[in-house]
Image (cartoon, rainbow, N blue to C red; front, side, top):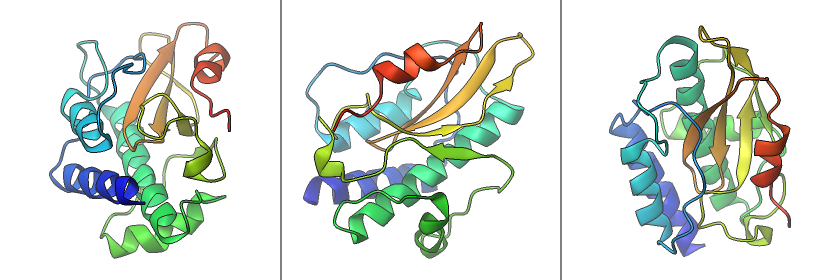
Length: 174
């Protein structure tokens, strides 16, 4: 519970500090054994991504909503014995309390429901808990915003539009 509290505080402070200009692209999970706070800090400052184009328009809007929903998921879990919500509406009272609300224009699915304790490693950035609907960018690639169990978010693109392999590699196996 203490680790989750630290993750929530770091995520909330980064969100409130305006760390919302990530780089676009997919990343591989960090195999290092960093603390949750150090991992969240590194992800927020680097955007958790490795390529050079800054996000704008639809991608930025979805990324920002993913960050807000991840914060809501973490706040919900902190007050509910580390259980993740079954739907995003359950996060709204916690987000209102943190003076953070999603735009309401982007649709997301919760991909993992259950206890944070059941995740293989809640301190890594490799477990997807949230994803947006996909959209096609100007470059023709299909794109989605994702939220992870450690609270960081990424935007990932696939030329063919199938995210199955990428998501399967990052799915929780409780």
